[in-house]
Amino acid sequence: LTLMAYVFNPFTQELDFVGPNAGLINYRGSFSDSNIQYIQSITAGQPITYDTVELSGGVTLVSNSRITLPLIGDYLLNFSAMLITNSNQPQSVDIWLRKNGTGAVDRSSTHMHVAKNETNVMTVPFIITASAQNDYFELMMCGSSASDTGIAPIAASASNPVRPAAPSILVTVNKITT
Image (tube, rainbow, N blue to C red; front, top):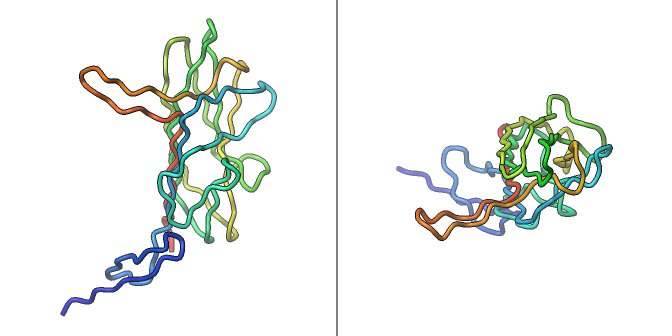
């Protein structure tokens, strides 16, 4: 006898097939941006914004920058950012997490140098904890040069080999505890 079950997922408005963990919903989200985002100030952080919801299963995007977690628990947040500068001198970019609009989250600052005519990919995984329902996290950035350094998408290539475009930022979030 094989038990098959479906659970209505209120976030996706679909029936989810569940196996031995019947009733558990895989809370997840993926968000990206296809625009250049230049650093606006070298003395203040700015939130990174997103223009595309790639996938939303309970984890939502609010105000274009707030990744909102539906339940208390631990989540794995991964991001990849395409760092660029138009400056003639190498510049630095810092990206970190902010929780609920205040401060920096422990262990979350990342720092990378980038030179003109280069694209550096910064990829960082974080385990984050939502201590209350609807806690939100934002990726923040600043750098050593304003208006010419930041994150930028990579255009698709029509020449062989044909390659798809890459967003300036891609974030994925998955709940890892029940």
